[in-house]
Image (cartoon, rainbow, N blue to C red; front, top):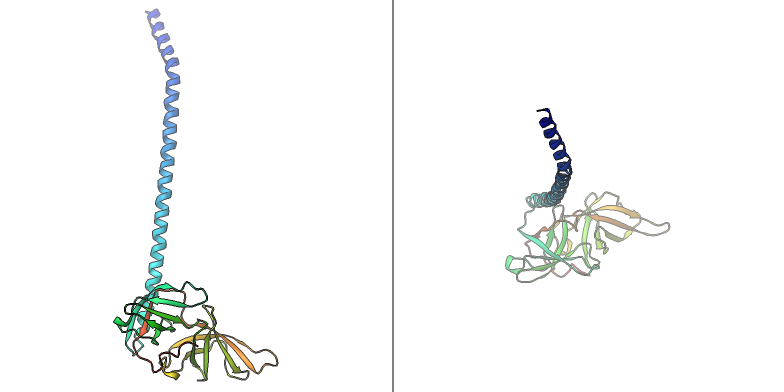
Length: 246
């Protein structure tokens, strides 16, 4: 009996020796499968994270655009003239020109010379109207100028486009002129191109060189001309429809 038990133990021990490499291989294979599954899960999570990040950025962009559109609609309540809502569809390929295309034209009541507004004020005027699309020149275009007045003092001047999207220039002002940084420039209504009182820009710099009789004034447009897609066209026919460009 003892001999038989010894034989069984010996057989079990031999079986363990034979099966040990197989068990180790199974454990190693399971480990590789586990690492492979973890890598697959990691790749999947990274992909999902990229998708969610893209969706989050898209949502943030839509929320910002919605906020600008709401601001535009709120500003429209303060304007007595009839307005046409339009969308910017393209920009001029010439970096030296500040011109945009709109998705509204003569069929919608758009005419050359009509003012174009953003949420914070004037951004330009219609320069050419097709049947279903139109072209607008922005107030910062180097070929554009408009009559303005200082809201604080009523002083009249001409604001010229500088060719830089965030700067207007007023030249030929006497060095003793009462104009200050922070002054609001609004449309003067002179010339019949723009109704009186639309915000245009705020003075950012008054440069008077020693010995000069004139000051050079820089101003930043009230509206961010390089942001947003929606604008309002003022549906009124100005007395002078071609006076917007020099």
